[in-house]
Length: 235
Image (cartoon, rainbow, N blue to C red; front, side, top):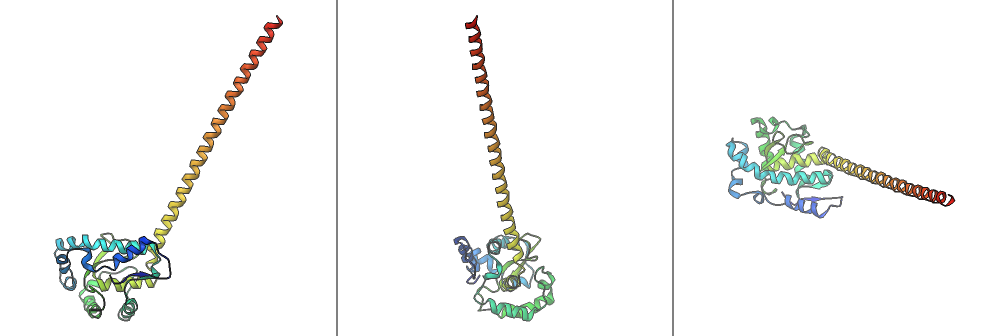
């Protein structure tokens, strides 16, 4: 991806590393020869299944980096390229009514859709690095990169849709879901810790009562001895 950044919200060193990974050129995620077969022509002519599968393994690394980023930072603050504004403006000008929260594959891969996408993509030749390299794109933006929820797409198509999802608030569902799970996990940990503390307290109380009982029994024995001794003396 192009220079990737996060604005208006502080980020950790780990997120900076993630953002840097997204800024790497396409060849950083696989062998150049493998990537060359999945450039522009791949989306307009069928690929053999074994070629798609081999490249998907490498593209998944890129996808996981991106998903980690939108899971860790509110997506509305993300900047994916140096020309996000231009990409978003051109995208919504050409695809004003395209539904992007849940994509219909036919809107991307049918013959009529390809004819409409081709001129849009070519506008960014020389503007967006590796604009025509293959990437993985989620169909339902509230879900992750599963086999059922993922399709191949040119990198500029990925940028256009993901920038729109971030700006229009659709990708926030991922961030909220992950954040809620973390809060729930912390809450469970707190309850477990509290339960453990109560168990220890009960154990200590039982030990105290046991010691107290033992001391009482010892005193009682001592008292009985004194009584017996007194009785013997009196006799």
